Image 1 (cartoon, one colour):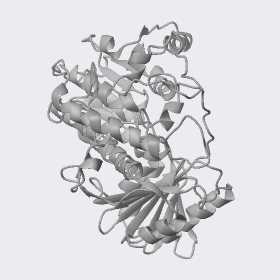
Image 2 (spheres, helix red, strand yellow):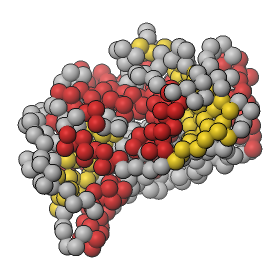
Image 3 (cartoon, helix red, strand yellow):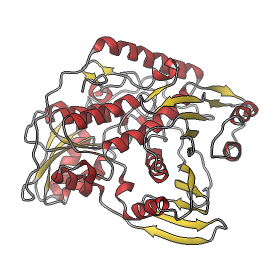
Length: 486
């Protein structure tokens, strides 16, 4: 991300934060108390956002005898109607209603559930609106586009007594649950360090000389929702929103949120970190994106450290994992290379045990909806908020950073007191970039500041510039409620 783009992003975010003071919160429909339905009664669900992850949501509900897909909601009419036809073919003629605007869906008082798989910038507002309208919610990861939004969803879920599941499905996989319990029980001794990996090679997304022409079957204003409505200079609207900080959070908040969540879970950490630093860049690419394709994040929890590495260029694995988590213990280490499995090793590298097994995250959601017990959820919204927020605070450090030479970056890392060998992590990152013909003397990485954080207030310590990036209220009719106003 160029200095100009970062500056424009920061300025627009700060302006939005100031505007929130005068904007107020949206008028919300008070949620009616819903008692649990009997097992013989079907729950009706609206699936919102069906171009990508939404297809998995459809698969998660379509064959259940106790759930009926009542609505398909998407701002892209062509995509939405296609999904309706697919459901008709698979589900013996049952035809859900297609609706473009979530607000129309929420007018149906008989609707029980809302399952959200929109782009990141719609997750929080969609979930809050649904909860305020009396619906239980399943919301994809990351649950929010920024820290403040995530906390607002938690506030809404608690205020209206609604069940809200986060889409971090590894928490429902039997192999992962067994592995995490083993770590907590001391299978590899005392664990002070977890390393999340998102080694997922991608490529540039292209760049247009003139603004992208939005097809007529897409309501672009509705698509933007709470994000800034701006011209796009990338060839593709869908999916590539991940690589624009206006709507996405980079691969840290795309794929990486899964591994961030597992790392925090395994370390037994409740709440956000006390300090964070991030460095990286989108070096070597001149495309329509502005998020980092290479990024290292360091979260300080005092006696524990959570490190996260994103690599969007061609790369080898690290200790047998590319997209996964590695836990370093005093008596060995554990490698989680997937959503469902984990292998334990002793200090010499001898394999001790492997756990493996799947699960059904949607089923866990439905069971909690029936029981009305938050504790029955494997991934309650509070858990989703905390793990998502770790991605967001790391991105804030990166966005506030500046380009530095490798020598300066290494020198500044040397002053950090963490459980990770930060110099070794940087050395591997530098070697990885060199293998992809990236010369850091010519194209420098961006190093963010070390930001102290107060987990209790979920604000930075004496840093108004960083605090300004914790929340943006939204846009016009798509305004996210202010703190305490859900």
